[in-house]
Structures are given as structure tokens and as C-alpha cells.
Length: 360
Image 1 (tube, one colour):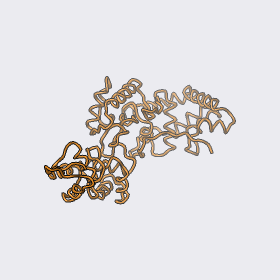
Image 2: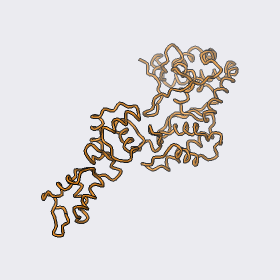
Image 3: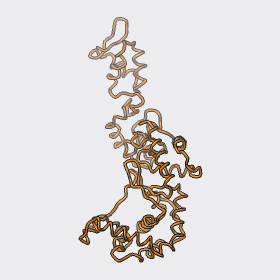
Image 4: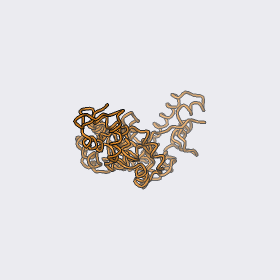
């Protein structure tokens, strides 16, 4: 089976359902005209490489080389020669209005766009996207930046703007703390501060969010909160992460059954009560603070049973019974009697002559 070329999509993202661009030219007709100018073997390479034939699969240089018994480099040379033939052809010159229209479309998106978003916006099916991908490669006005550790693959028509956007995103990421969470308006304001000498026409919400999506390091959660992509408040890979967002949003401890219900209603994710409870138990971000009640460890809650909490509140100095109750109830949702039963256990605590208690 031939190896196919792939593109990397943003983690956790699904192809958004959006309106497809309505450009005036027909890509099927245009692509046929352009490749008709190419020698037969080069035309075959282009068809295989871009998925322009019966199959939408895009093959690698290696796969094509294996088919013909030639090296990967030789296939690359044939492909490059075929593209040069197109660019030097009469059909290419006559197609300039179509390329200009496509370039204008990209400018209206902000001049630099993530590859996946651009292609999804241009066509609804893979074969059509393959034709647009081919036109982008052939057209002299379009430039592709490869995927890196910092950015997703993207296309641009303005080298200067692209560099400024990349620099601004890098600087924005550096300004964020590991746990910082910002509202959408806050992240956009900070981003604008980092964008220097960029055309003000590009500084609208839609384009700014499109540029933010270029970064692998900056992301948003389902609540439209932004921060570092690795932050616990941003990444959402499973029930545990959704539970974290739910409890953080509530701002106070929640019963695991309520957490499950809120996940289902807020995020439209199936969350069984038992499964949710098990995930909360296994994750150090959550602390059991009462009967089925969970809080976030980042709020200052410490794991352990009531006895462990009493030990911690008595570390600094002996306390009266009322003081122990008050301190324990700051971090545990339990009845006074539960605290007193533990406090009066002589194996762990002792009552001093002045009526205060200390660890045994």
C-alpha cells in the first residue's frame, strides 16, 4: 500500500463546520488546464503527490519512487520540474485572476492562516481541498511555513506580517505564567500589545483569534478561557480535565454527582457518575473534603482524613477544642462531632492541663 502524506491537526480539535468560501473559478477545470502543460511523467507525479486523480490519497515521494524504482530525490526533481513547467506556461499566465482572487481571500483572513483552517474554509471535501493545496503550491504569491514545535503549518501572502505575527505569539507565550488563565478579551488585549507595526485593519477579533490558533503553545478551553496549552486549566483530554474546569468554575467544593451532571450539561460530554467519581479519586488535583465533596488542591486543601487535618492544625501550637473545630472546618466539610471523635482519640492526640490539645 502506498504511503500517504498527512498534515498535523491541532490536538483535541475537530474539523469545524463552517461555510465554504465561494470563489468565482472552478478548481477542477483550472487544475486540469494547468497540469495539461506538464510532461507525462511529471504530470503523474503531481497527480499522485497531490491526490488529483481518482483517489484523494496524497502519496509520499518514497511511495512514488518505490512504484517506479527510482529514488526519492529523483521524484522530487520530477515534481519540481513539473511545477516549473506550469509556472512558465501560457495557462498559468491566463490563470492569474484566479490566483489573485485566492490571494485576496487569504488577505481577508489576516494574511497568514493555519493550513487546516484555510483548506477547510476553501472546500468541503478532501478532493477539492487537494486541488486548492495544489494551487497554493503552484501559485507564486503563496508561501507555506512548515509545522514546528511552536507553530502549526500555515500559509501566508505577506512575509512581513507573518514574521511580526510569529514574533508576537512567541512574546505573548513568554509573558504567560504556567497557571495563568485569561478571558478571551484579556488574551486579545495582551496579544495586541505584542503586535508591533502590523496593519490596524488586521486587528479585529476574528483575525486575532485566527492568528492565536497558529500557536501550539497557547490555547483555549471549552469555556473560552486562554492560557498556556499545557496548563491544567486549559487542556481538556478527558473527564478529569472537564471535572477540573467544572469545579474551578464553581469556585467551591462540589459533590461528584453534581460534577458529572455539570460536565454533561455544560460540555455535552457523556459523564457517568461512577466514572467521574473514580477519576476524581485518582487525580491529585482533587481533594475529598466531605462526603462525596471534592475541592481543588490548588485552593490550599490538603489530602488526608480528618485525623490528618487535625494533626496539621496542631503542628504550630496547641489549640482549644473550639479552635480545632474552626480550623478543620476551613478545609473539610464535616460535622463537629466527627472532628471531636477524632480529637478525643488518645492514640493520636492528648488534652493538656490548660484544656488545649496537641498531637500525642
